[in-house]
Length: 581
Figure (cartoon, rainbow, N blue to C red):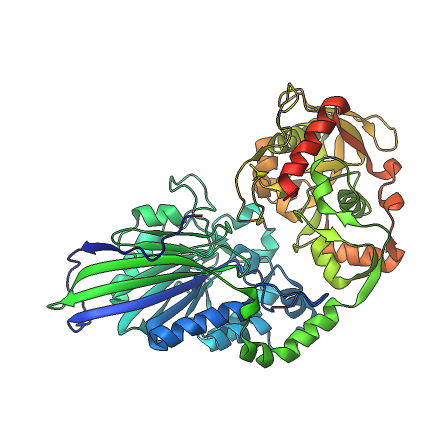
């Protein structure tokens, strides 16, 4: 994490005439940004009376800044991924579809000035985001996504920009969604549009808005990761824009959950991280002399949000909505017969992954399941399960696809997956897991973290196989048979269950083995509802999650890291580094 504790960088520059005729003098604009809140709207964990970071707590800090600097001098912008991640959003997205959606009401209460749309906002589907957009328009802060282009007329599906006046300045804010949505989400979710790379159009858009609106300040808000600034990653274009686009004063970004700020002579960047943990706080000082801006100075910082400092007035205002979500969240859905720890998934077969694979294989005509752990370090306690537990087990709204793959493609796929997951080791003390001694701001892990994202660590079920940690990439996987003992053939085709995220290209694993996900429909033989719904249906039908049932090796097969004498101690040591604090 890079921070600037309000260290001032100044540049004396002549930027040309202020077309609106700004009066001579000094101007100070405060810019606050949030992103990737993932519906951490309420400060309660719903279960056990716990307190967490929330919009309520962010609002406490935001109001304090508005009080200190003056409401009319503070701009508040969000960079997307608002409608997914917590059961509060799920409830208003899919359960209570008659009441006005809560998210626009929260944005109106907090008086957001602008919101760039995120990929997880698109993930909710047309019925949700189209409904939410209508209320956001009424609230004065619509979703913006100028690179979401309509297929019928070539115009943006969502607004490109918004103009506001703060601190005596005319401010234009252009907004963009992540350009890589096609790689994660099935097309029916974003039907009628496509997503262009931000960097391919942002300069043209900036020039257009500057010419049309004559703003004093230009902001580009985008749900795109910082990246490396080298133009190579479609979902990480923020530093590309920061490094190359002329006429932008602020870049506000997100998606990577990486708290980061940077200040240069003529521009500043804000990324608040995720899950209401930080507010990105910036200031812009302008000096106008003889009708021209002659000086710009920027300040940037990341302000930790204190969970316990939740705004009591805001909490009281939305108490009824919280109680409705809590009642939904606490409804009993079944019994869990053993504690489940999601961290166990990184060192071999686990009850957590056995459950996911069992769900996938129960959907016809699936013969093999491919799945990854989507909760990094969760614990689901044995006993009565409530709906809230289903979000720990499966936090995303992924659908289930069944895709035709050859035996050879399945083997190659597993080689690619485990290569993201493990190293080849040759002696005691080597790390078998691909980990590094570095904090991970995404997972809040301290000390050690995975080099790659663990939600791409796919294992398989329905087959029996081993992963040899002493062999190099390409020769680690040995598949002995199908789970029921039938022969596994490299030249045979199999029906493979996987998430819609993976089938659409998420994680790049299918592409790595030569499968074109743009043509995935030619391989899809079945589609099923969201996997969390399949879990709910499983509980309604069976009443409980029993480790013996979900661990039936005649159904899910068996896999292991080998040789055990080498892999076992190394895996235990690496797991201790990752999860022992």
